[in-house]
Length: 283
Length: 240
Image (cartoon, rainbow over all chains, first blue to last red; front, side, top):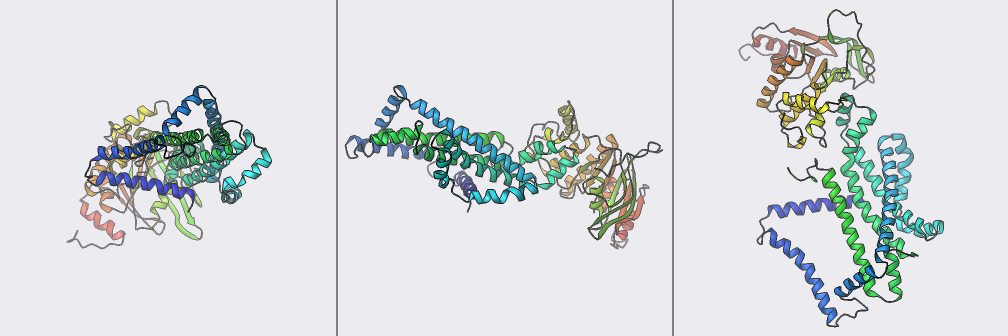
């Protein structure tokens, strides 16, 4: 099962869950269930805090949540936390832009032209079979452990999901709509702009959402190895001094940025796919 | 599109399309052979025939969607087409759908006028998914007419609609054609629809026009029997 299929399956599962929660009459009501869904993780954090304060968990193993927050405030005000965060975000963003551009360009080419498909598709599929993190030693040999290596790795992770979903989206367009475009006298460019790209957009955005996750994963790995700045560097640096609070903080930051990236992707879907019954919501 | 050649300027009348000696084949299988057809502007022609007789093939050739293997199709301009399915773009609002391919600064106004004409003037910014089948087909009609075609090709556009909606659509089409006066070619397998709408009814068989019936304002039942006989269906007068 490919990654895309997994993503699609996950999306369907989301929808199924939403549908189920809408149709089965819950004994507690929707609002109480929502409250429980937030109270449960809050309770875990509170228990963690209490155990840490009581001394049941050593601060070397897992510092109290309040300690992590205090560290965050301290690092943000006195140290370079914001700077490191900026460096990491910039790496992720530039890698994403490079990878997404290549993936989209190749995907569009292969989606439109049978010759391009014959020339490109098999090679790309073969490279895709390699887990992209496995090429890291090779990339370090090529590019060293500087910015280029990190951006390359992120770009590599982003290219394939975007490529595959773009070709898939273009190939899935109803040929009857393309025929209609010809009947209405659209130019080739008009056909691409009015029919092919909008039709492929749901699939492309699925690729974007998946690519955001791989971009983040690539960044964590790249920054863990030989970085002089960034969130990953902060974690590795803290490891040397056994600063568990800083390590936990970096993990939390990675998580928050992942959540934010997903929120942006969902927002894009809601905006750009307002016409689509699965995304735009009923009107 | 290469098949559409401008007719000679000396033509006395004003035909919407002139087809001469048309030949259309899929490999060795000849579907249309030496077919001649002329439709005047403002004339409503219905084309009947059994499934597989080549009537949709003819319409697609006239629309410039398929290449032809011989003969000539002379039309002054690109025809507009309404298909059996509405083929609305789900990602475009109704007015964007109607103005698809319309390269004019006042595209939205024209689309609005066309939508008003089919009774959907208050739904300009709505999505196609919020429409019923009949409404969607009305938008498809508006999209065809906003192009101000001289030839309008209708490929069984009402076949998927329920009986009551179909009757309402017949009235609407009759009215729209009376206002815009394009030449119309309606491909249908519904004899009653052809009788209700057309000035002239053609029956296609073996890749050519086998029978032609010109509306004379007579009683419907006789022409219906004749047409059905041409289509290979024998109906006794008592049953009809």
